[in-house]
Length: 213
Image 1: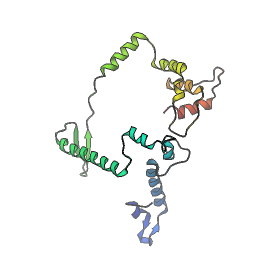
Image 2: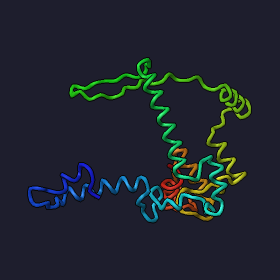
Image 3: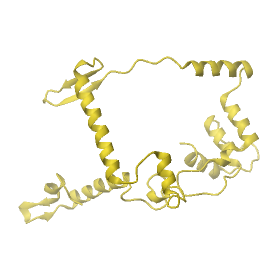
Image 4: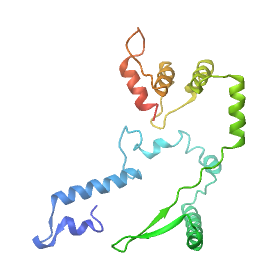
C-alpha cells in the first residue's frame, strides 16, 4: 500500500518508524483512487467503477474466441503486450525524428529549468462533402424540421430506445416514459407539474442522471 515517495512521509524514522496517521490515510486514498480507476478495486452496484466482469457480455466465456476475433486481438497476454510495446516504440521514434522540424510543437523551458510541450491548435478541417450533401437533402425534404423532432418521431415509430442497454448491470425493457423524458431533457425542456402526467418527478430525475450523460 505504501510505496515510493509515500514511504518517507508515512513512516517517521525520527520516532522509530512511527506511522503518520494523516499521511497514511492520504496515501491510502491516493492508492485506492488509482486502483478504482483501473478496476483492480471496484464498487459494488456502481455504474462507472463496477465489477469489470459486468462490462463483458453475458456469454463472453462461451463465445470468447468469437469476441477476440471481432476485436482482432490475441488471446495471449504476452503477444498483446509485445505488439503494443512495438507500436509505442515506433510512435516515439517517429516523434523524436519529426519533432525538430514540427512547427506546431515547441518545447518551453521554465525558470526552474523544467521543460514542457506546447502544441499549437490544428486548423479547422473543411466539412466532409457527404455531410454537406446529406444536410442539404434533409433540408429539401423536411424544411424547418428540428433534428430532435426527427429523433422523437423515429422513436415513436420504431421504439429504437428499447434496443439500447446501459453499461451497468443488465436491465429489463425500458419503461415507455424513458423515451419521452430523454427527449425532453435533450431539448432542455424538463417536466413541470402544470398538467396531469403519469411521469413522476423522481422518474424524470433518474432518467436525466442515468440515461443522459
